Amino acid sequence: MRSNGRRRVMLAGSAVAAAGLLLTACSSNGSSSSSSSDTGSSSPSASLSAECQPYANYMGHDGTTVTMFGSILSPESDSLEKSWADFSKCTGITIQYEGTNEFESQLPVRVQGGQAPDLAIIPQPGLLARLAASAKPAPQAVSDNVDKYWAAGWKGYATVDGKFYGAPMSANMKSFVWYSPKMFSDKGYQVPSTWDDMMKLSDTIANNGDGIKPWCGGIGSGTATGWPATDWLEEIVMRNSGPDVYDQWVNHDVKFDSPQIKDAMGILEKWMKNPNYVNGGYGDVSSIATTTFQDAGLPILKGQCYMLQQASFYAAQWPDGTKVGPDGDVWAFYLPQMNDKYGVPVEGGGEFLTAFADRPEVQAVQTYLSTPEWATSRVKVASGWVSANNGVPADAYTSPIDQLSAKYLTDPKATFRFDASDLMPAAVGAGEEWSQFTSWFAGTTSTDAMLKAIDAAWPTS
Image 1 (cartoon, rainbow, N blue to C red):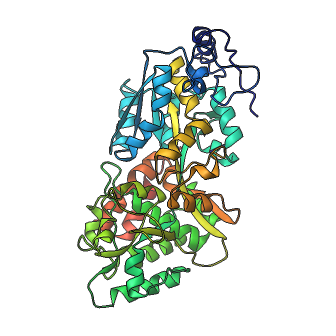
Image 2 (cartoon, rainbow, N blue to C red):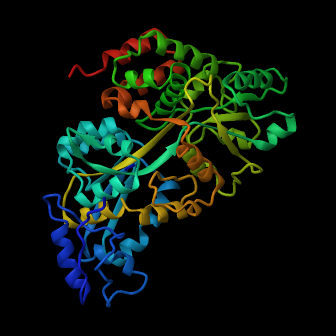
Image 3 (tube, one colour):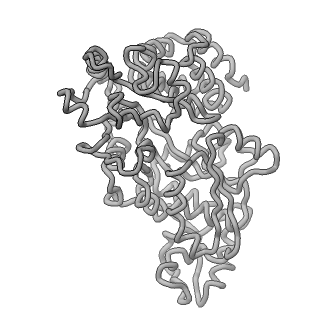
């Protein structure tokens, strides 16, 4: 996510005075708005309670409502709303959040129909680029925060034709395998350190005679069904062909119907389409297409499968009471390298808060959610949520999985790449690729036909 010459709001005398200045700062021309991390000559209004002083620079919008739309569902959305509860209470801005499994298809419909939300949490830069003509450039204060608190690459993911549209909200570590430490211990299995070791372990589990499959999986996600499978392919491309090929693939300089991607599909077929390996707890290979990603790992808790490849944010999907940790009910290990030529491949994703309105209260919310103060609040209420905002104190992460995620996301030896399908044009990465993968797992299309169809969906301009 990514000089801090922010315009300072001089708070003198009362919250009313602060309100007028913030209204000026948050004008519709995209000029600087204040952030809660401003320092210097500003001083909190004497009329504010101690708990509301951190939000002094966002006052003046009492009684307003800001709508927000995203793909984050309960229980994760519950912690999202808790993270801004104090801000909302103190500023009087009601943030009306709506989450849906049909976000990727519904957001364009709403935007094109004149019913756009004030703010949208967009996890695909490709979708953001598609809707940029209808979006509002981020205020200068948001841009300044990203420059100060995120690594440089993050800002580019939300920049279209030279205009910056939104601060990253989260960063997630996708290169994880969830497993049961107890099941491993009971059988004497070791966490694999290489891809070959992981495949040998899968063979051992498949042949141990107890009928428990090594892997479980699901790619169901409403109108976004198919996205987990794109992650599996991306992880393989990074490890098998390296970051340069990965980048060329994102730009369609390397086609889906190319030797490198066909080779990766062959590896994926031997892994997650292997009837001896999947789909523990649910059925045959085709059940992956109909099992939701939220439910995909639950058989691990029932002793019906050993492993699930999923991101760090899957921590929020385990039922209440599940202990996550090295000695817990579930834990995670790094999805191993195939060789040591490409460093430590790490795939990640993120979400970008993009505005479709530029009212002062909307810009106030967008600015606050770009600060380390908000990110720290979110970290504290949400296990499994990690930010690449370097203003978040390391000790704010208290859950083991968040600490493990941060370790890989900040590893200087890591070869980090953003989720490829999220970077591709929306018609491809959030469209044809998802549907083709769903058909591929359901057994209704071949690999060759699938790859050709995805290439054909690539926009010509």
